[in-house]
Image (cartoon, rainbow, N blue to C red; front, side, top):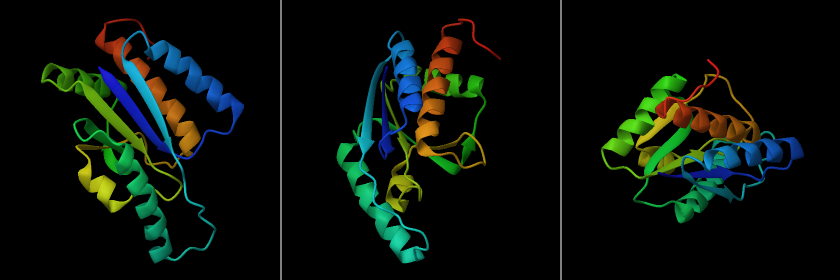
Length: 159
């Protein structure tokens, strides 16, 4: 299976880059992983709703330009469905059984995702009702993906 993670913004902190590198290495035993960083727009404080929409639309256009339209699109959205680690593993496994060989996960920028990207999604997934920085969330997504593959293979993992 191929997994693509499209994320808005660069990973600046070394400790996040190290964690990403570690999970990227671990996942290489289970899938082909592609990570694409999308340039973010400057988002100063006190933006109007219209200005926020313009920023999300610009970032959304960049995401669309990098998105494989044949992949199964999962957007990370606070309003999405929450799954346990086991349920995520089951979802990925079921998709594979029914012929899906490419999953794309999209992590939005500080303002979230454009309506266009959310509407294109095959699935909206939430890991929590809490908001996380996108750099940290990329680490969480990689860890949960790794955990899902371990679960699918019947290999031990921390519960």
